[in-house]
Each structure stands twice: as structure tokens, then as C-alpha cells.
Length: 137
Image 1 (cartoon, helix red, strand yellow):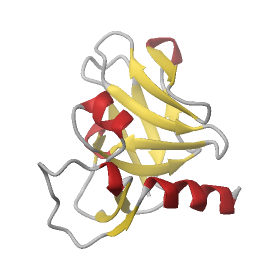
Image 2 (cartoon, rainbow, N blue to C red):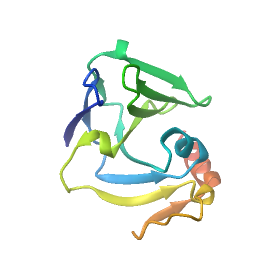
Image 3 (tube, rainbow, N blue to C red):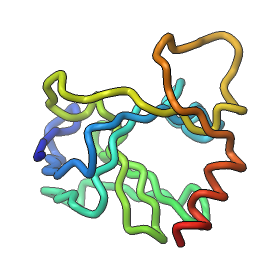
């Protein structure tokens, strides 16, 4: 399934192919610091086409990941997992229909007590997330 989206100012247009129809929430402290709350993201694997890479700032937020921003308007464009060559995009950035399902939450152990999602999801702690990626790698 294909999709597209753009930043607030329109300088960066993204074309993607979704790796699945599942949406995840990340509650890690970096995602909450980055966006002011949990990141609701969809896996786009390595299928992301960026219209104007010169308008994108890539910030290495850890040894294994980069976060992308539009350098003109600051829109959050992606979380890029370097070892897997895998892009996760904020679902709100993309033009979508209602065919997506909120299925899992990661870094649930870092989620503050002041919010809660009502959806039934598969939840993983930070340690479980790292163990999962080590097993795949």
C-alpha cells in the first residue's frame, strides 16, 4: 500500500510504501522530548522517497538512529533505524484512510502516568524492544 505526505511548508514531499497497516506508539523519553508526546508511527521499511533531501536535516539521536526534520518549517519527517535501513514516519504526516490499526506500544515502561490509550495493544518495555532487535539482527 502506497502513501504520501508533506511537511507544513511543502518543501519536503514524501512518497512511501507501508510495510504494514499497523501503527505503533513509542513512549521513550527521546520521542516525547522530540514531539511533546508519544510518537504514533508507521513502518515504511526502506521505501521512503524524499523529494528534496537538501531541505532535510538528519539528526543522529543515538548510535543506531536518526531523526529527520524539514529545515525550513521544522516538521518531524521520520525516525530512521540505521542497522535495519528502516524508516518510521509519524502517521499524522501522511495522507491516510482508516485502514490502519493501532496495534502496539513500545517503551511502555517510560510512559508517564498522565496519559493512557484505551486501545488493546501489544506492549513492550525498552529492554524487550532491544532484545527483539538483537534477535532480528
